[in-house]
Image 1 (spheres, chains in turn cyan, brown):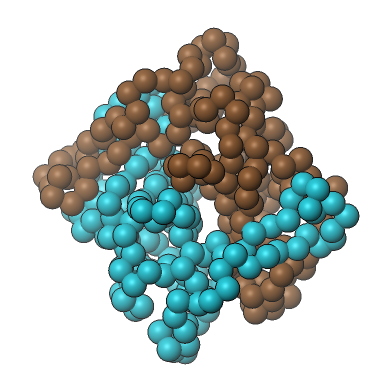
Image 2: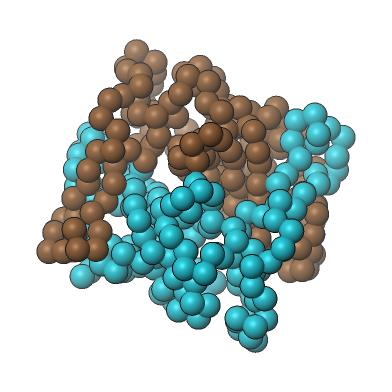
Length: 160
Length: 160
């Protein structure tokens, strides 16, 4: 299965109101992907797919991303075992963003060891008034796994 | 309130495990933002913020984006009345993505008129086998509002 499973983008009406998958990849060849937990609705991660990764996700029914830092196709869970089984796959109005609703085998999606990558909340409104810099609060207090045990000496994907 | 409310990105440990908001903007000055419904967990939209938009969102407690197509600060709801009240604001592990959990006044977030921008599901796995191009299925069948009445002749943001 390859990129020829995608339709052509011919008119705005077809893209917005049609029934053919015709995704828009950005100038680097990527489309952003939002991944939420199928049961809780929690946002687990935000990543990117290239055409090959999206085609593989559709074929396998498991999340496959494009790692921009490592520049490789990234079948999520290949290292950690934390495979994301796709329960629902959506595309947005202008077809430049993918939404995966997944069931995570193992319960965690974040390379730091938390359940979700979004484990900290940001102060806003009255709570942030006068704060410089703005403060974060941990919403998850315990890691689901120890990243050192799972990833060993693999380089950390976080870049400054 | 301006960009000086953000902390500096000094070490990977500080970015991932610290309590200071130190967001990473991409080479165009933007950070992607995932916006979900506070109650249902449904993904409403995926957009971008620049530093000014993120600072304004933190200040107002309402979603403010950067429109890449119109190249303007975009206080969501200013035209349509469909303001997104921020109930929870999260940042991810490497602080290069924002998650807003919002309460939408008016119940719709999509310029095409649907509740969510992600109103179509994509066939995958056994259901997609042999499909070229891959087919979409409408998961929302009725629009919440008529975009012509709300936006009039404003240019459609969808680009081919």
